[in-house]
Image (cartoon, rainbow, N blue to C red; front, side, top):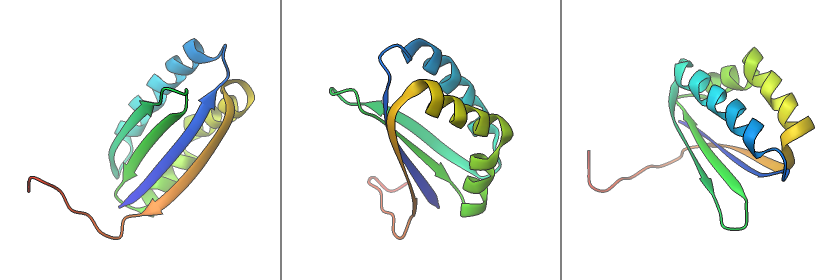
Length: 100
C-alpha cells in the first residue's frame, strides 16, 4: 500500500472555492482503480492534513497524473495554498485492533 500525506495551509480568502474543488477531487479519487481511502483533518492552527491510501505506487501515480487532478494541483498552487508539503510513503508494516 502507498500512503500520501498532504499537509497544507490555505490562503485566508480561498476556503469556499477550495471546498468545491476538494469535493470534486474526493469524488474522482474514489473512482480511481486501486483507491483505498482518504481522510482530511484540520488542526487548531489551520494546518490541513489529508491522508490518501492507494493499493500500489502505480495506482497512486495514475491519480497524481489524472488530467483533472493535475488541473486542480495547478489551481491550488496559484489560488489556494500559502504552503504545502507532500510525502509519499510505502507501508512496511500494519496492525489493527480489534482484528477485522
